[in-house]
Structure formats: C-alpha cells, structure tokens
Image (cartoon, rainbow, N blue to C red; front, side, top):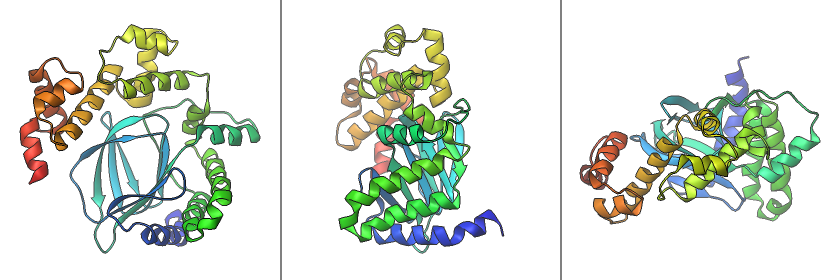
Length: 296
C-alpha cells in the first residue's frame, strides 16, 4: 500500500476536525494557544502574507507558496516549516465548496521545542537550506495533529493535554528529514539564531532607514556573513526583505483607506515615484489600479 493510501484514514480524521471548527472561510483562531485552522472554498489569485515560525499541515486541497523565487507546493499529507518570519507569496490552487482546502497552522514555541530536543539522544543535524522546509507527513505526525484538533471537542482537556500533544508533534517533526528547521528555531547560539535576530529587527523597524553595518552588529556577524546566512534562510537580501515588508504594509494601509502617497511615506519611502515603481513590480500593477482591482 502506498504512503498516500496509508495517510487517507488519518487525513480523513483531521479533515473532519478542521471542518467542525472552521465556520468562517479563511483563518479560524482556536482556544488552543498557537493553533489556527483554515478553510478555503475557491482558488485565489496570488496574495502576500507573513509566515511566522510555525508548522502548517495540509489535510485537503492544494496551495502554492513562493519565497524568493522558489516554489513550494502544499497538498494533502504535506507539511511546511518556517523557522523565521518570512514574507511569502501564496495562492490557493485547489479548493471548492464541495472539497475545500483544509489546513492547520501551529505556531512553534521555542522554549518547549528546546525542552523536547534536550530530552532526545543527540542527533546529527544538517545545515539549514532554503527559506522553508517542505516534507511528506508521517502517519504519526498526522495522527498527533488530528488529536490536537480533536481536543476542541473537549475544552476542559485543553489546558492539560494540548502541551503534551504539542510536544509529541515536535518529537515527530524531529524524526523527519526537515528536523534542521526545528533545530534552527531552538538554537540560541548559531548563525541561524543570530540571523533571526536581524530578521526580527527588520520586522519591527521596516519603516526605518537600513544601515547594513548596524544590522550586522546587532546580529554579532560580519556584513558578508550576515548577507550569506540571511539569503540562505530567506532567499532574499536584507534590503529585499525590508522592501517586501514595506510594500506589504503599504498595501494594507491603502486597503484601510490611506492614499498611495501617505502609505509610501508611512512605511519609510522618501520617493513616491520609487514606491510606485517597486509596488508595481511586486504586485503587478500600480497602487491605484491595484486598489481598484481589489475593490471590484
């Protein structure tokens, strides 16, 4: 029997659990800390989002994710791990009202993850490659995720049982070839952690001028070393990363009613014409036309 067939019963249980607690199309936040459930009923155009350090497991349907020109395709039985905050381009490519895209996202608790790693026998860890890690979920991982979602049926058990199942999920992930991503999240001393420090600063201060030397000092790294590890983790340079954050933030501000000039200055641009050019390059059309299309 193939792996895909082996996954079917477990994925069926996970689909039932997600369907039961996704009354809204899109994101549904749950009482379990860090757990969100998603239901999409139609294909979508490409849209921009930020992936925090997290696990995404796809139970049904398919979604394409692009980071820095690298494509990742999430489909039933696959999982994605992001170890740093990443601006991504996403597109739902397989979903309908009869067979929606169903997925779960679990934010990764680095303190809990470190405890799980410390309790395991030391394992060789391969260097982190690429901005995301995509893998085929083993049955044990799907089952643990289905049981975590199943706790929503028993709210009185969440406080005690959810942390136990989350630890099991981390343990199962650490047994996969994508374990290096989790070690990058948990480590407090290697290049991944120091690069993540620089990424975090950019997330909080995207509207400020970027001085690469100061960013390298913050990360306790040389400029060339920071560039190398930053690109390895995000598929972008620090400047490209900041630019994507600025443009995504500007788009959200314009959706909220701010005009293009005000949005450009609010996110740190000094030249409106440069903002318009870079916005069109990222989103495919100038700000005004993009807003009209979104409201159509």
